[in-house]
Length: 61
Image 1 (cartoon, rainbow, N blue to C red):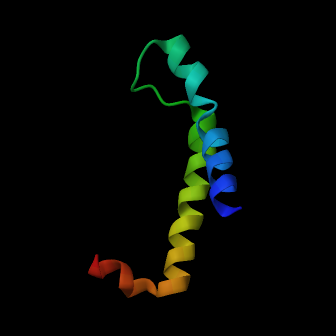
Image 2: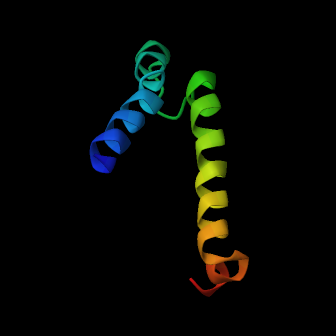
C-alpha cells in the first residue's frame, strides 16, 4: 500500500509541472504550484528522518 500511495503522491506533485513546462517550452522552468507541493513534503521527510534516527545520524552519510 505504501508503494502505491507514494507513486500517486509523486504523480500529484509533478502534475502542475507538466503543463507549465509544455507552455513555457523551457525544461528548467519550475511551476509555483509544484514548488508549493514539493517544499513542505521535503521538510516533512527530513523531519521524519531526524525524529526516527536522530539529528546526528544524518551527518554520517
